[in-house]
Amino acid sequence: MESGQPPEPTTPATAPAAQKVWDVPTRLVHWALAIGIATSWWSVENKQMDIHYWSGLTVLGLLVFRLYWGFAGPDTARFSHFIKGPAAVFGYVPKLFSKDYRAAFGHNPLGALSVVALLLAIIVQVGLGLFATDTDGLFAGPLNRHIDYGAAKDVTDLHEDFFNVLLALILLHLAAIAFYLVVKRINLIGPMLTGKRRGENLTGPAHGIEQIPLWRLAIGLALAFGFVWFVAR
View 1 (cartoon, rainbow, N blue to C red):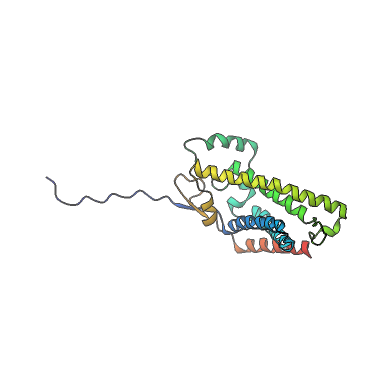
View 2 (view 1 turned 90 degrees about the horizontal axis):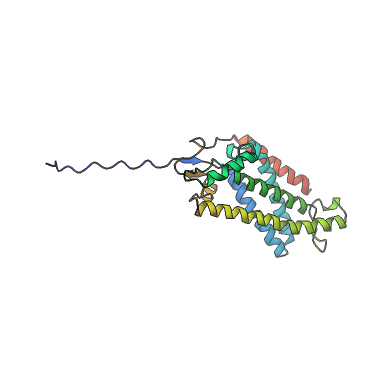
């Protein structure tokens, strides 16, 4: 005979723990680079060369900071953490299509190739822009004075053409994000906005990345501003 007492509530499943994957500086630089590149493209298309000049210098400063942060930042921002050799890259591909696939702690070996390729392409694009000039010679990169007109014209043409390479890498990057979202059901955009991800079977330390002292951040900012000032003076 039943007691008439209500059944005890069922214990809910344990909620997935939040893991901090991306630090604030890395996320800010990521989105600032996207805005800076888009602004540089828009300004050229609309012949706003004064805006193009300063957006290019802004991207330069962001690059300097990101390169420094690749050595001084937390684990997931460091090049030594995510840049792997060919064996790791080729070994990752079969795992990507396995049923028990687990998202990497930070960049996976294949995604790291995309990050490195994008950084190198942006470095080349900005480097060329420092020496480039417009058709009328009214606006020029801050280092244009160090080369003659013929060399500047060649650099400018290469600066314009190489943007197509950068654009192709950006589209490939976006395609990879779409693949993870649609096929693997892994949202890569959310963690780059919030810095955290939620889910089961996470890789890496449970607490996520470590706290970086502010003096390291201050050095990176000083290097970025100082380098841009030195180039633009």
